[in-house]
Image (cartoon, rainbow, N blue to C red; front, side):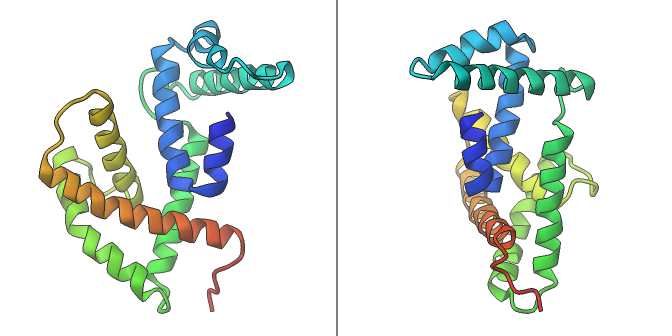
Length: 183
C-alpha cells in the first residue's frame, strides 16, 4: 500500500508493474487475507497499529476487487487497466503533438522491438503499444525473479522499451502536474 501510493505519484509505469506483481502475490496467497498478512503485512514490524490496519484493509479490498472482477487466476484489475489506458491515451496524444519530436523519435526507435515482442507473445492488434511494452517489461522482471536466462537480444530490446516507458512516465507525471503545453 505504502509503496503503491509512492509509485503512483512518482512513476506511473512502476506503479502498474508493482500492482501486476502484487496481483500475482495475492494469487500466490490464494486470495486469503490471513496468508497476505503473514507474507506481507507482518514483515513491517515497525508499523503503527492504525497503519497496519489500513494496510490489511487495503489488501483485503484488492482481494475483494479481484474476486468481483473474476480475475482470481489471471488478468488485471480494471482500475489498473484504466491506468494503462490513460497512459496509452497520453502516448497517442504525444505522437500527434508536433512539439514532441524527441518523444516521437524515441517511440519509433523502440517500435521494431515492440513488433518483435508482439510476434513472440502472439499479441494481437487489440493490445496497444503501451500494454505490450509493460507486458514485455513485466515478463523479463518475472524471468529475472525466477533466475531464468534472459537472452542478450531480449535485454537490448527491454533497454529500449524501458527508456521509452520511462519517458512516457515522466510525461504522464508532467501532464498530471499541468506542466505540458498542448497548444
